[in-house]
Image (cartoon, rainbow, N blue to C red; front, side, top):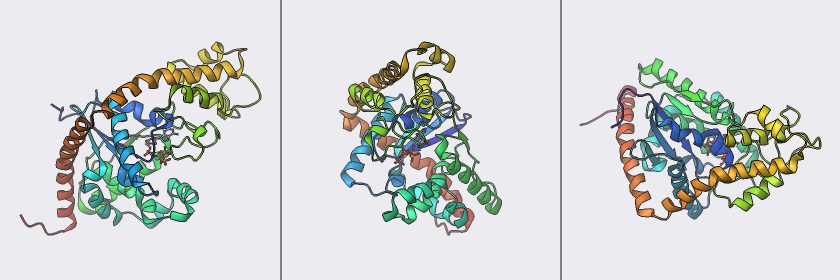
Length: 334
Ligand code: AQP
């Protein structure tokens, strides 16, 4: 049974492609361990994914794969709630109410909207603009205390806080005001091809990111091609973003600190370093992948987990939405 006094955690991930090493390091690797301390809800946020044009068949497949990957990292469906966002209609319903309590100016300042508008000039749709409102609904529906995310999502969690406070002030205390949980190490993993940009699963250059399901030889090849610099010394420095990024990855995968890494590769050059980083990632992802394949191959069992997760989430979400509808003055006939 869940401990009712435990604080609550919510986080989501878009099935907009296979999870990257960035998604894993910045967010997903924290999710299973958080189950020990908190009541956790984890969602595959397919409503968010369609803010960018998706191929329907690919989205469907990526959604199953995303759920299987999350389970493979150790999320326990008997303990936590894991569900697909579109299976819980209250997310979209609360998003509307929250949109009426979110300012145009606030949404205009969101850096992800600005970035994605530049990337998808042909499809700057309303969903892309109101994405953070839906994210606020995701979090506030479950009265989550904490939201474990990468650094790029901090601004959205802060907006969720502002919207929650605004609603609470206008209609009386309703929502828990959530806080982001952002790890000090690896909150922003950078592209392997352009280490000034974030590693992103929808990057058009496949060598820029490592997918969690990439074959070992593919992972090794991508690290071999990673952009570094001409100095040849493994050390962390602001003007060495490529090498620093690889050190962060290696440090997280092996538990070694910078001093140990610098010592290990002193005088060895980047070839040996890149190979070691690649191998450390392969060592972490291989067992997850074996489990992922097993889970994905039993689709009926996976669907049972997701159905049960959606039912549990709906029950919680329904209670919050009922309260919200009552507070804003919608007629409720029993
Ligand atoms: N490069 C990254 N480093 C650290 N954390 C990251 N996250 C994403 N990229 C990095 C974190 O992963 C979680 C899930 O992200 P998402 O799927 O909701 O969307 P995103 O942040 O837009 O991630 P992508 O990979 O860049 O997806 P696309 O390409 O579809 O936009 C979040 O907690 C995020 O912070």
